[in-house]
Length: 206
Image (cartoon, rainbow, N blue to C red):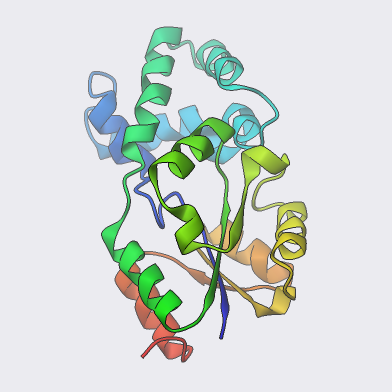
């Protein structure tokens, strides 16, 4: 039996800011190349304004105000993007299947997600997270976020298992390195098929 920890955005739920922005902000983001640049401005690699929102240090309205002031984009345009995020966070069927197979194999599943509290509330209301996971940590509720060590330490305490027994699946290399530095095991998630192959290689799935 293993203790496997899932990230959410980009792992269990669709989250690719360049393509998201190209869909919802096509007048400003005509293609993926432009999406890369605008995403870097908007989300600041989950530091700055959005990082503070992720950590629950500021509310949604304040985050929108700060992004608008910092970038010069009209506030209503920034609001449009933020309002579109819940719909963007669609379940990834391959990851759901992986979760179901891991549970059938007897593994314990947890989650550790950088997620503002309003989006955490949305996901809890819409999806059976309590059926899939024993428990989890949303950054917006604990005021800490990956890749900082404090959130990994908090997760260990909440999950009640040794750090060395935890295996994180996350799509950000920085979070993978941070987890390993805190004594966790970790696999970089690119898609569900690759994650399944990595778990098979570890002897965790047939």
